[in-house]
Image (cartoon, rainbow, N blue to C red; front, side, top):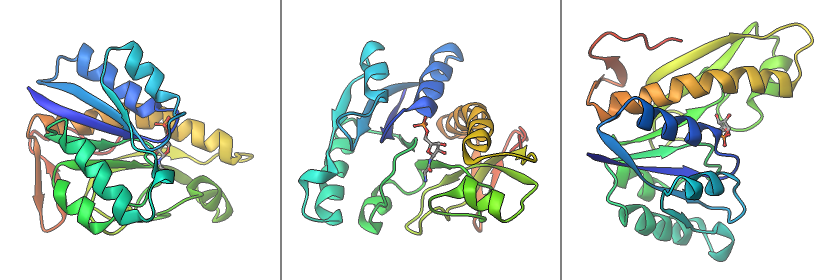
Length: 207
Ligand code: GAR
């Protein structure tokens, strides 16, 4: 049984999708903990209701990023993670933190990377006149939103789309994409060659 630790900052709908897929698909894994940097993150309640251990490491209580990340790392290690999942975790992580979990830490980002790293992705895609948008699951490396790409989901950008309508369309695909990618990592089905990720059983990496 592999231990999955999920980090959230808010709603936690991707976390929910992963918790549910892990249970219904019978992954050889358990959700060891859900950790938030915000005490009021709604996702914590879902996890608690499911009997999953939760913890809060409130970034406001720390003088700088290094001190926060040191405490966060301590909390994560406390649950002996095989896999660390960033699911709407809205903190920039220090290289020192990332290196401790490199190769076993994933993130979902709401754009087709390498386009639109950082915040405001949907508005930026609309303003750029993009006809396609989407989400990316990638390995986390020290450079923000830049690690090897595991899987992507594409959606149309429709005339009249707002940030909200596009975000909702992308999010519904994230809920399919992210559990699939986490399962692949749990089951050892990913190979990385020179920064390019292959699913060794040939399952589609584009949704
Ligand atoms: C998701 O759309 C995720 O892609 C995005 O935040 C949302 C979290 O929703 N993540 C980022 O922007 C990370 N840079 P959720 O809390 O309901 O899963």
